[in-house]
Amino acid sequence: MVLPAPEGPGRPKRFCSQACRQWDWVSRQRADELALSENELVVAREEIDALKDQIYVLACAVQDVQHDVNQGGPQSKESLRECLDWLLEAAIPITQSSIRP
Image 1 (cartoon, rainbow, N blue to C red):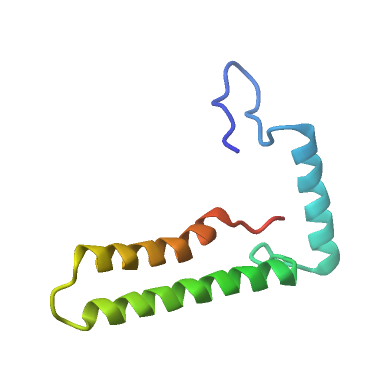
Image 2: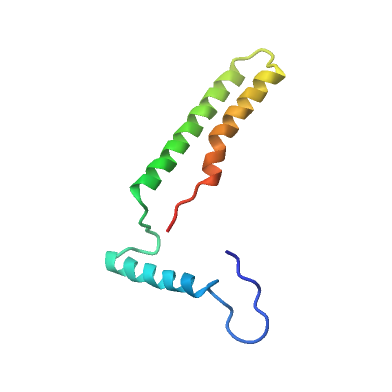
């Protein structure tokens, strides 16, 4: 979440709410307990597996479309549209996914 530009004197806000401030503190305490560096992150295996699956589907779609387009010869408007639809179908879930803290 983007915080609004500070107005007036005082320190600028670092957190959007007290809850976000608390979650930051808890996460820093937990990171210290696990001896995690600033560049390391703990993520649920099922979230990583789901993201890997989505990336695999997208990679297959890209490979399929590359093969279809590189076969040579004139491509019909409909076949190019099918290729684009297949790519979008594979890409959109990745753009809508996120890894939660």
